[in-house]
Length: 390
Image (cartoon, rainbow, N blue to C red; front, side, top):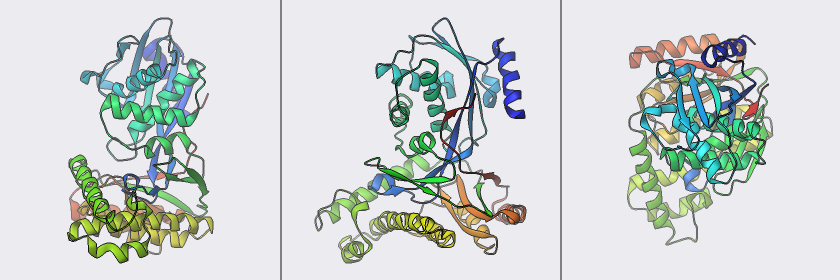
């Protein structure tokens, strides 16, 4: 594989030795089930064939030296295993540093330093989880380098903990779980509260997953995300007066219909409607795939986007334009929706394999005409999770 050979050469040039091990950690996309995780619902992500590569050698001292081909101008970042604190100037390297500290905090013996060359082909800031991919990559490097007795779900939890506590980003567990636990040709139905999960095989014969990146800088995400969470918490507080529940995800469609008028504020009512019906849609979507009915799955993806646009209001003109361009091409596209937090980021579409070029050309033209700049597209496969390659 040409990419691996090039990375080996880069490693030798940077560190003056040949790499001993090579690892890969995928990105992830959520096929359906958006903004359900913190509402006690289910998500349905899968790992992708794009991701983050890591080449390593073990050192005799306590220094960790990291270099990324994606941030060449930063050069080699170096720190000591006894000095694991967040440092702004260490930029992207704070993610692996946070994972190392979390492993040590959990009692794992990380006795030596190591050299790592990183290369990722996940677009940064796209909502495909480049940070979680890097965290799980670091976890598998630590497990393998130091022969640690640790299973993947424990590594998933420690990777999330590193992002929450060391980086200070209050992410849920979906990203790390999908990346660590991914299985080729399968998506994962995951209950983010209980971590109960099951794999669903996706028969993509004749179709491909195509990710469309709006290339919009996502400035609003954190504040709007917190706002939506607060609105759902308020809906839950109101509905708890009428039904014994601990999350919106426990309610059926019939429950919502009978109780919706109890929520006086129309905005809060819409937020609850999305959270409840999106969870139901996700469970339906899994059933349709298990019945090999990809057409109905596509219709549920479309309904998901409409709900995110009209009831949850997290799409915006860029995502809507890309999705509508896909919907224009009904003969080529099974379904399309925004994926991730919203307000920019990416769409996910299921497209006929023999029509991908036409799909991309039409979507690019329409998007550029309305938005003023081009989107980017990535044709991806559903991949296994984080693993050692060589």
